[in-house]
Amino acid sequence: MEYNTIHVEASRSYDIHIGRGILNEIGSLIRPIVGDCRLAILTDSNVDELYGERLSGLFDAAGYAADKFVVPAGEESKCADNLLEFLNFLADCKLTRSDAVVAFGGGVVGDMAGLSAALYLRGVKYIQIPTTLLAAVDSSVGGKTAIDIPAGKNLVGAFYQPSLVCCDTALMDSLAPEVYRDGCAEVIKYGAILDKELFDALAQMPFDREKVVTRCVEIKRDVVQKDEFDNGLRGLLNFGHTFGHAIEKMSNFAVSHGSAVAKGMVVAARMAPLCGLQDVTGEIVALLQQYGFDLTCGYGADELYDAILSDKKRRGGNITVVLPKAIGNCVLVTLTVGELYTKLKEVLG
Image (cartoon, rainbow, N blue to C red):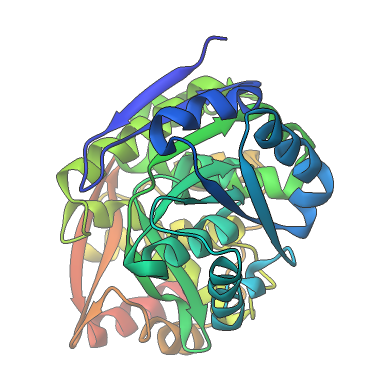
């Protein structure tokens, strides 16, 4: 079958395959990467109910012994208890360094599987099979792995690249509209930070899923290859995330990641002119509203500021935020925490 392939040159080089129906080829796609080995699948309850038997059958038909571990669907599963339980599961399955972990699900599953693979036996191979739009364009690519702790989101993690990413866009057909919309926030983010042509094209709905996912992955690939360990340029991918993560935390994750990022992008856009940059809030708000996002922040400056202070992007008394200079051109702006608080007060009151 035909599919798009994007190659990533990083600390571990790997391919990302994107195509409708590509899951049916999973056995032949992974064999050149992992050879004959044992697999340990991490998935969530929603994905397992829809596709668990199918994936197990495909691995079985390809001659792979695959054990499966299922966590409840939802952000709250991305926690230390589940991480430790899955690591014990890998040990119980007698996984060795020549075996591999398979992440089959959205961002929660992908993040936790990646961190588990980085930790177990000091590193085993892992394969990403994203099932959501958000995971396909964001968390499955680039090697950021993490779990949440009570102090904040993604505060415990590691940079650990997958060995292969297989993205079957047909799996997104079964997504609830609000879950698919979450991924659209990340897609809009890519256009806003680095590709005005993509941003403008997204006004035509529905978009070509394979084409748009491929373009977003290309953008992320290009950034990761230049700054794999997030020391500069890669920070642009956090547009909307500093404020979005704070909103997620304040809501106890009742606000989903994509919805929080959409709100966070609006906060950032409104802050940009306060830092001497162009005001493109109207264009960003218009596109996000077209996709059905509620852009009400829901929290005041004091609440958001307190939550932001635990953000992993803070360094000492400074924090770097991503602000739009123009559509398709975002920049990194370093503020003191005092300056951030003052500007949040102006934006949010």
